[in-house]
Length: 230
Image (tube, rainbow, N blue to C red; front, top):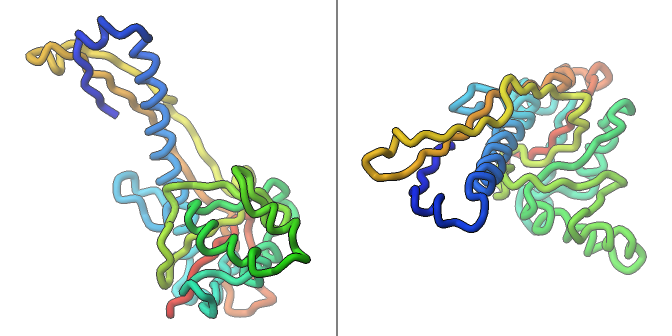
């Protein structure tokens, strides 16, 4: 992250502008981490495979991927899941994934999934109450909003994750967020250059196996939900 700041702003600001800028830079880098980690394609910059891609791309025959739940399309919103689809993801989750959470874009939750609970009626008031607010729940697992994940329903697209990241992924910081300041880069503009960098690596490794025989499929701690092809 590279940001230009005039010397006058740095001198005249009543707040510690450097500290404020460092906080914002850290947020931008954290958002970039999420983009890479939850990507549903190979990241073109780093070459790292995101969680969704690691599972979804493990075989061309999607039905053979143990840790993949392909959603049906018999919904008001095309390509949205049914409650049975989501329950199927929970059923696939191994017992050792004790700290699993749902991960998805907020719009997917409120536009495609929460309405399924609304349709249950008065007898399911607790389910409906659990579906809203800043910390929603589904089938006993917390829902975490990741705004870098897919938010538009489309065919053949992975966009929901139920997983225990502590069991199925490895994230390593080689160098945490480092802030540097230079008065040379923008010397002719009488400005300072604030630069933030970090180095990290990521791997989604517990993705389950691929097998044409259902009884031989073994799921991992990362269960991905994807829309059907049509």
